[in-house]
Structures are given as structure tokens and as C-alpha cells.
Length: 341
Image (cartoon, rainbow, N blue to C red; front, side):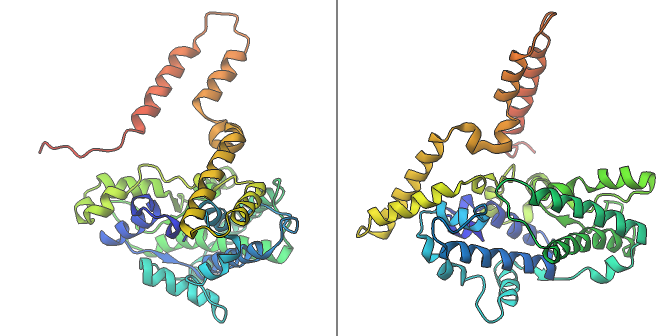
């Protein structure tokens, strides 16, 4: 949804990813629980767009961040969001949008999840409950009531346990599992490790798969010839959602002020000036404030930390760091198809 704000189709990575997956015959589904969360997020963004500069006490919602970075006026978010859902049946509208635009169909996993062993369900529920507890105590996050937290945990349990049980109903495939939970959630991607710690050797395989793997599979896998050329060219090597993360509310307020000061100009000019000013303002905030966790774990930060550490013997970290940097640069080289047969 956020990518509809991008003018260049080559920048719509997730759109290309989903459409490419459909081109090669992969079937993609969404549960009612996820649809509910998406619709509630849009509604939260609408509330944010109508709030005053001093009324909002929580972090800026994701779609609101993407909308602000596009240079559009905050009070126009509600009209823009109507392309995804209306007022009468908002969740049904979201489902219909996902199906019509991307071919993402509806399928719930409650029946499959209910057939799981009690111990497995209890452990998975415990993992997700702890995860949501940690997320809500983070700075800038609002406190959730018990009912909302319970629903979020229930949705995650349905997705993870449902996929695990769905695999048991299918015949053994020599190429591996055919059912996966496509997600960016780091808890989901590390679920197998948590289950192995709590259940021991009887822990099931991970139900989650990363969009990064799907992207690579579509780029270099045997089915890449089935993808339309423009979609294949637009597939990202790494799916990065961080471009819309870590936007302070002060920058949103700054965008509102700029629109007022530039009133009377052409709307296209206003959007461009707002985008340019936001980019400059983000740079003025410093690399650590903008980069967040990505900056924290960057090569330069690691190198600086190692340099500050006391070294009594001959330093051995330089060769290792140089090798790591070489590997990182190699992985970041865009894939080029070979011209040789």
C-alpha cells in the first residue's frame, strides 16, 4: 500500500515481488486476522492525520510516515486511504483490494491451528505473548489493552501453528515444504530457535520464510523465465522496509509547516519542496538517529568499537574485518544473468 505513493514503478519492490510470485504460479493467501490488523493500522493513520501537533503521544504509524515522505498534506490522508477501504465494510474492502490488485486470496488457518498438540500451542502462544510485551514497552509505543494484545497474539499463533499443521496434511515433497508463512517479522523468522529451546528435539521446522529468499528464488531459480521481464528487473536483492522507519514526529510537524508557508504554489511543487526539506532535515539529525538498528550494526560502527577497545597483542581484527567487508560488498553486487550457455 505504501508503494502506491512511489512514482517510479522500479522502486515498488514488494509489488514486483508479489506479482512475480503470482506469475510463476505461487499462491498467496491472507488470513482475516492479518486483514483486521491492516485495516486497524489504516484507521490509526487516519486518526493521526486528524490530530493536532501536540495531541499525538505515540510513534508515527508506518503508512503515515510513507505518506509524509511523499510530500503530501497530512489532512489528505483519509481521502487517499479510501482506495483501500471505505466506511461501511472496511475489512472486506481491504480483502477485495488485495485480491483485485495482487491476487492475494483469503484463507484462514484456525481449523488447522486447533488440531495442534496442546503443548505446541501453549509454547507458541507464550513466545508471541512475550514478544508483544517487549514491543509495547519500547520508547514511543502506546500501551495496549489486554484484549487487543490477546487478539494480536491469537493472529500470530494462527499463522505460525496453522502452517505447521497444514504441512502435516500434505504429502511429502522431495523439494521441501510447500506451505510457508511469508513475513518480515523477526520473531516469526526466529521461531524455530525459540521452539527448540523450549521443546527440545521435538520442535517443528520453522513455518516462516523471508521475502529476501523469495526474491532470490524468483531471480535465479528455475522459474525466473516465467516472470515478465519488467517484473524480473524490478525484483530487489534485499527487501528493505527501513526507508519508512524511524521518522520522528517533529519531521511530520515540519512538513505541515512547509505546506502552510508554500500555500498558493502548484501541488507538485509543494510536494517536491516538502520531500527535499525532509531529506535535508533527516540528514541534519545525524546518521545514528536515522539509521537506527541498521546503523548500529554497520561496518563502520563495528570498526570504531574495535579501535576503541584495548589491544595488548598484535591486532588481529583487521584481516577479519577486511574479509567481512569484502563479503558484504560481494553480496550487494546486483545479480547479472550470464550470457554464456
